[in-house]
Length: 310
Image (cartoon, rainbow, N blue to C red):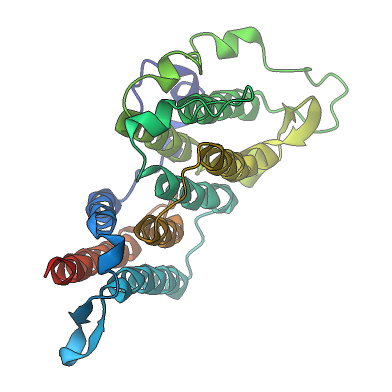
């Protein structure tokens, strides 16, 4: 999670009793899936057609090892969802609204994972942002979403209140790091970890909101909307800037290789599985299903990579 002192405006304005921790099996699965993607990216494109002996001695291509990873995460998504449904489980509307942002975050990781430091800072020209600058904005935007949403849900305005404030007061934004300063500083791994930290913290603090609080009024782009609408925008903000990163890479003449495309598929499939439990309480058993799939996927791609090196 993000440093408590930095994110006090989020922590102080939300109920600690409603906080939702990330299941421990998910923390483990995340480390495994990153290592799995590293293996996919390490396979030379020319080696993808090499033979790979799979279950029962069946011979497939190395390429299928990466697709098998995708299949395992898709199956884990289904089984985790069925596990929760079998318990008559309902984690609440707020968590359901937040869940797609978890999936969107992992798709963005899939685009970023193969990039180098030179890709991060390359100037695409035409006044367009570098990828570093875009990520600074994404991180800052998510932090602001969390801080400002916490203020509005605590204030408790009705959507038709004639005295609805035109905006949150400046004091709510005091201490928000500059998106073109601290938020975009460091290595690509630093930026990715920073995004994970603030998204996870925002989910932990706000996924337990009641439907009454989700109906409280807020402002977005000057319009009166609900807190639920604002939370539902987290995922689309991530998707919007994932497309921006893709367009930047196109301007730079950076075309993804097939292993890079396969790595993105793996991250995206994992993200959809994780979204089933993201922000949900008491989801350790379902999260364990996802972790088990991550372990099998890791073993699968390690074996396929070994075949690629023969």
